[in-house]
Length: 73
Image (cartoon, rainbow, N blue to C red):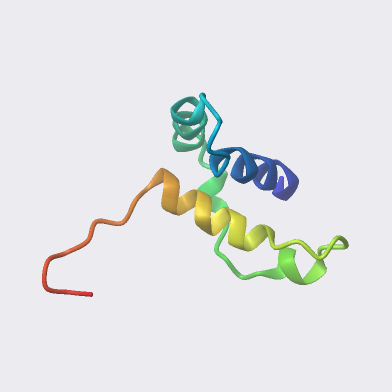
């Protein structure tokens, strides 16, 4: 599953991708993205020295943007 999220993240940061909303909509409907608790075990054990936990974290931020509150930085 981590490899799928790495691929999804690669396409969401691609500026020439014309299907960004379609990809984000699919990720919003999937509950598997929320199953990751960002423990980073996948990053520690990754044989290619990638960072799937960071990619999943960034995907979560794209799918569910955090609202900024005025006066709080």
